[in-house]
Length: 138
Image 1 (cartoon, rainbow, N blue to C red):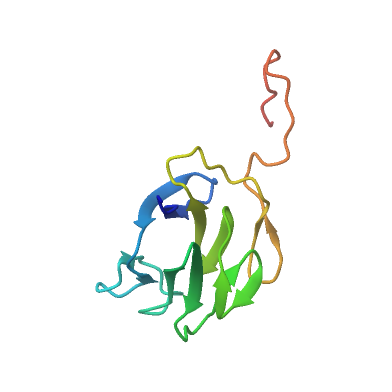
Image 2 (image 1 turned 180 degrees about the horizontal axis):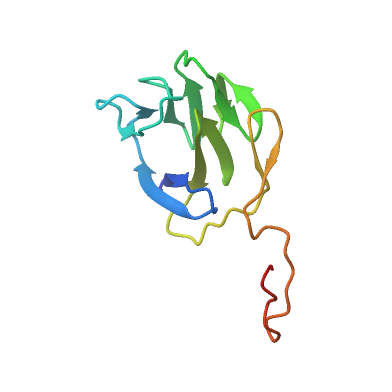
């Protein structure tokens, strides 16, 4: 039986995926320490901030006693089962957890910050008919 695979994506401010790390049988540690599997230059991250590991068919995120906490979909977590398209905030860095990384994963839930604040991109919420030129701001 083939086990499901997963990936962790770093998400840029415009909602695009910046980097991708595949998650398999070995736990993946995220932090700002050079020895972390996922090393992010973010002073808001602890040296070893959180880890993601497989638990049977599921994946679990565990906060590693980080200074600023680990947030999943706007809730502070210490140990939590992850679900496809969960948004993780650690420090000032946003991640997306995705099962089956080969599929076309999109950010389809509103992005939320640590206190439930909805994060939007500059183009978010704009509706425009593509057949007409978009007016420029004066």
